[in-house]
Length: 371
Image (cartoon, rainbow, N blue to C red; front, side, top):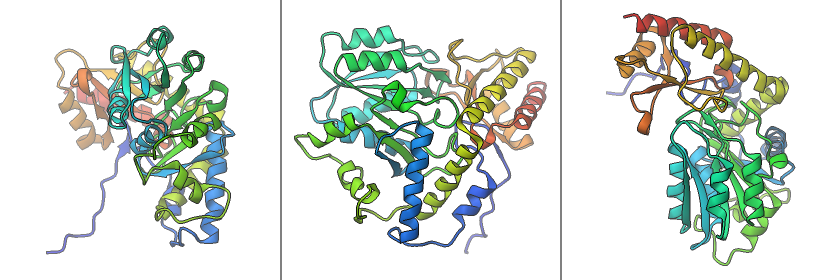
């Protein structure tokens, strides 16, 4: 028997991602295909690169979307910059710092971890101690830790990394488009993100940017990049400014979607978009306080886009989360690792970051807690 045509249920996506997608992005992705070397597509590629530079706040020439989700962006950065035996210092305060460590080790790095309790930030003093007396090639940091809702400040850690002779690598998967990400001003050498969070495009592309300093490191490698698919030297021949050389078949419809989502980001304006996320985070926090609930992540460093809401004592976390989905069509995420069963991860990302969504979630949560 051939299955019926799939029809997804109507949801309000307020989990750790993906976020809701604007209708115009979905409409863009439904447009007819052209070839990935078609002159019209190449022209669109240039516009995507330009809009990504504006969104990352960078002048880096090597700024483009990698074919794959945010994790592909992570692997892209590490695979291109690491050679076997390189020392890499990684801040670990949640799932994605842990994943960075795994990826770097698979690339042959000698990893030094700097750990903080889940929900707390990586402090500059910790990085300073870790690089002292060593020869780190990279200091890597998760800017917005999606598993805990903690936002680690970047600028001082960047200064420490560069003073030690290291590159700064930043995970901006959840931060890009939802709070300030200032690649050039902060001295970030390598950064990656994802389309499905605050950019409100379906998952499938990973915006990346490498500084000239990072590209010099790539070009001076003694061994080939271990990944053919993610080798920036090869990808530059397709995404660069010269004659386009075929590398792989780009996800054409995803390109359409990213183009439209970035257009919407810049049309709203970065400052206005950041302010919308901050204001709705504030409304959510106030509403939670009215229900006697709080946010688990470190005070003063709570991420606007991802809120780790404490589960009250004696409440079945999974049952409430299931009730929100089944009875109200609202998706939120569970806690991970040490926070499993202790928090709900409530996302306010991109198109999902709406005042009416906050109000609807608070009303639904109050009803489910009262059952």
